[in-house]
Amino acid sequence: MSNRVVCREASHAGSWYTASGPQLNAQLEGWLSQVQSTKRPARAIIAPHAGYTYCGSCAAHAYKQVDPSITRRIFILGPSHHVPLSRCALSSVDIYRTPLYDLRIDQKIYGELWKTGMFERMSLQTDEDEHSIEMHLPYTAKAMESHKDEFTIIPVLVGALSESKEQEFGKLFSKYLADPSNLFVVSSDFCHWGQRFRYSYYDESQGEIYRSIEHLDKMGMSIIEQLDPVSFSNYLKKYHNTICGRHPIGVLLNDNGRKEGRKEEWHQNIL
Image 1 (cartoon, one colour):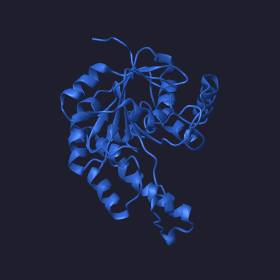
Image 2 (spheres, rainbow, N blue to C red):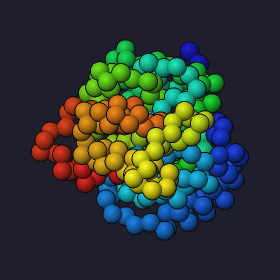
Image 3 (cartoon, rainbow, N blue to C red):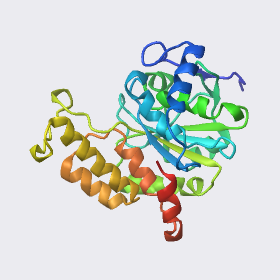
């Protein structure tokens, strides 16, 4: 049996973000220095996965809430943009490379997840084509740099799950969500508007189109903050908002292990 370490290259470096480690480090430090730590330590964050030119400063608001001193495992749930997937998939590699430093996949947790029979395997091609997880790797590395040898990552590619599948995966991940040393990162942009995306919802009462989009997204964000998967599902059915990470968000909201007594704690620590 081969002990060869398999690595996923930083395939979007040089296009979606700089491939220069020093330059990338300076950019991330700049964005993080401009925001406040208000909900630290976060137990889960939702942040975008567009090119850093567009979303780097926005993502900083989420990653500023990460406490590296207590975080030991980081689950990164990203939607599948390129391959049809009705379940969730795990990577087939050992290491995810970034221009800052390499991130190790937690093979122990991967083994536990694989034994459930609920997951598929990503090919290396699928893994490197997908950007939804990769765009969180440099920020993860930066947020954890003071403890970079003390944590692992658990990347999970999330398919177009049915509501019942979101519930099943929410239940599966609930024991990991309950552990304060685990951080969940959910990768999602919000409204994709225009002919390219076949979505042109417009509430004229809000004024300009961008105001309508902003209002629609904030409505969804408010529902997410209430940790109510049924209301979030109903919101999507009513407005069909093109939130590309809606299924990873659905999995997070369906943490069936969350007790009512912990709801306020989760509300305060999910950004």
